[in-house]
Length: 176
Length: 268
Image (cartoon, rainbow over all chains, first blue to last red; front, top):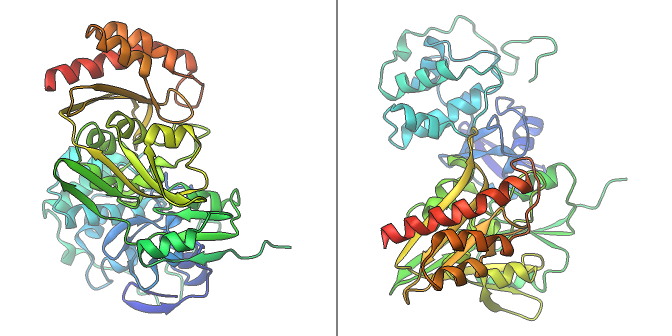
């Protein structure tokens, strides 16, 4: 089976009933989708499959053969964060970070489908995403700012330069 | 020792899906995956064969001549514009992403959940008088949704299509539990069909969605929504779960029947 993950084609050997989450994390080493509840209830594994937000823990790999998958790493780049990434950075919308990648994917999809930043619509869009730090206020503010174009991604400069293949931040005991 | 890997079938047309399902022996059907995949992940389900319906072409919706036909893999999200009370129920299933992934066929076939009711769409489909066309041992058959559920057909049958006539009016009343995504402890669906008959159904009042014939009879005899609500209790089999106690459900079912019927009167 094949996937294109963040623009890079990959051939996979995981069985077709393995979850997309398993394939991303364990086979490809893409660890931004988090293995939280693994039953669709927490939202931490959410990725874009052919542009649509999907719970990677609920998708059998065999059902997405040939699909284009985007994780939070693929939303922007070190040279230019996406509006949602920049908003989370500017508005301090991440605490422990476990829910952040799923939240960002959901927020990106919300804006892509025309979300304009109205609070109720943000709550609806993020309804399936649990933040164990309960940092919802900052998250909702950040998504609203991104949706309204109130962020300046170009002003956010990366202050580290990880080499390909090396972990960007290594914290002993932290979940990958 | 590990279990043998299941054979995985990926049909590319409805006909292929029917052939691949055969008589259903040992086949686990995966449509949207929202219910089955956690069972596979956690080893609660170890199928010999798995049928992935993603590319089966069973995802069409037609709305012609007053009849609505839903393919088995139509996502729940696509029902948000369907006739009431199906649309209102669909909008209260889980969250925006799960609704895009879960399917009407999977919801219809959902086994009773341990912690919360499953199969929220069963009640509105029963109230709409929907028929379900399925295949399996003995070939294809079409039956009312309440018969399909009552006969335990969700085990061993492959749902192909659900069909119902557009009603004159529909209404929903529910005991929703505020959460990051929606859980419905108990809901009542009411429909006035094209012939003026009022049908009532409930989810969360039995292991699967049920019709409320006692309440329907009471309502037909005088249009008394209060009395219909009281009579509904006779049709239910209440149970405790993580969302509500059997006692609370018994108190609330008459209230929800009354509210649904009152709304139905106002929208008709």
